[in-house]
Image (cartoon, rainbow, N blue to C red):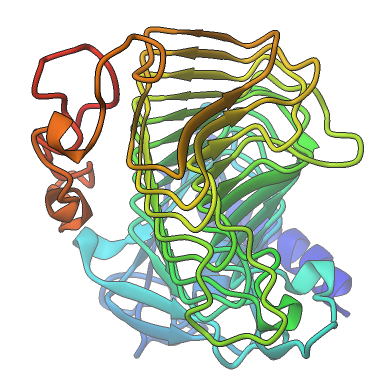
Length: 399
C-alpha cells in the first residue's frame, strides 16, 4: 500500500502541479500550509492547505511550500517521491521562519518493539527518495528517524532541528551525491528497539556518492554516535561541526549498546577504504572516542580539529594498513590523546609537537558559548576562547 501511495501521489501530484503551472514560462507557485487549512483549498495565504503531504504532492519544479507555524501531528509519514531540477529545485520551508514542528509520535513505526525492524517506506517522519529540494527551518521530533533520505542527489538541508526521534535524527544513505547538510541541530535521538545500538545525530551510511558535505552541525546527547559514516563508500566532507555528549544511557536501556563516538568515520566487515575529511571541528565529552576511523583503511584526513575530555582516544586512527593524515589537531584531557598506525602521517599535533597540553593550556574549557542559541542566519554561535591555546599555537578548531 505504501509503495502504491508513493506512486499515485507522485503521479497525481505531478499532473495537478503541471495543470496549476500552465505553460513552462508561468511563474513558480507558492503553496501555503497551515494547521487550520483545508487540503481541498488552493494553498494560498488566505486559503492554505492543511497538510504538508498535500503540498508535497502538488509541488512542481521551482515551487515553494511555505509552512505556517504550529505543530503538525503525523499519522502517516511525509513522503517526498518526486524531484525538482538543478535549475528549479523545490523548496520546503517555514513561513517567514515561524516555528514549525513536525511530530511523529503517533506514527506506528515510532514504537517498533525491541528486536523489531522498521519497514523501509516508514523510515523517517520525513521520508525522502528525491533530488533537488531545498528544505529548511523545520523541527522534526518523535519520528522513526527524523529525516530519512535514500537515493537523494543535489539537495540542500539547512537550519533543521531533529531531536528526540526513535532512530537517527538525520540519515542519508543509498546512492546519494551532492547533498549539503548545513547548520543542523540533532540531539536526544535514541532507539529503544536496539537498546541504543544505532541512533546517531547524523548518519551518512550504507551507500555511496560523491560531493556530500556537512557544515555547521551540532550533534549531541544521542544514544549512539554524533556522526556515523558506517559502510559509506565515498568521501564525506565535514567542516565546522560539533559532536558532544554522545553514547550515554540517559534512557536506562537494558543491555545498553551505544558506541559513544563523536565522529565515526567508517566501519563494516570489511570496512570500505574511504578518504573522509574532517576539519575545524570539535568532539568533547563523548563516552568513547572523539574521532575514530572505526576500521576504515582509507586516507582519512583530520586537520585543525579539537578533542576534549572524551572517555576513549581523542584521535583514533590506528587501523592496520590505514593511511590517515592528522595535522594541526589538539587533544586535551582525553583518556589518551591519539592512537596512530605505522602508515599514519601525524604532524603538528599537540601530542607530537612537545610541551604540556592540559586544561590550563587553553583559554577556556567551557563549551557554554558554543552550545547556546545560533546566530540569526543559523550559523554557530561564537566561542572565541573555547579550546584555544594560550600560547597562540596554530592547533585545533576555532569558533
